[in-house]
Image (cartoon, rainbow, N blue to C red; front, side):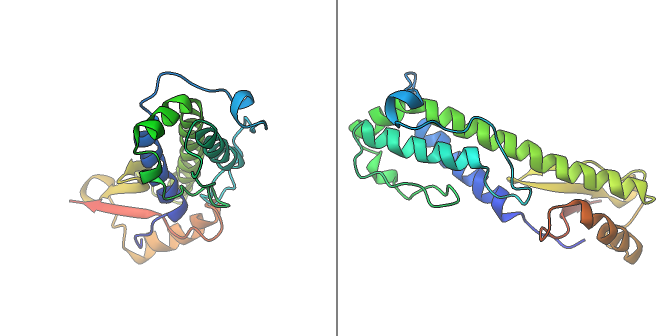
Length: 192
């Protein structure tokens, strides 16, 4: 199987790491009603293609508004997909760090949004593994997270098949239909 990455998951995970570093160090919080003037969606609705959920994008906007309200007036809004603005220098000052602590509520919500989305993505790949087992590969493993992406770790000696054989690739192409459109075949790591 060819090695592919899910760019949406990778982008969300990198965004989470940056956000956790910037926002995870606070103890006080501000609720959305006291800072943004609008309510955020509380559920996560995945687009099914590794895209960001509506809750994630909404919470990123809430966080930007909160940071501006707490002393970082030039903090930019996220892009339409919730992508993190390049604003590290805006929150590097003592005033910016105080704003991050005051807005830790939003960092926690964003962390939860990403965790829920990663769980949904993992579920898609579990269905792929189940399909592969149903198509004659009973030892096909469940997916794992590795290097901030979902992948399958296969061992020809333990699993009893060659992941790159034409027969296995044909089965993978049959099971590709359970994955989101356009995602391609999943990432595979073959061990000895």
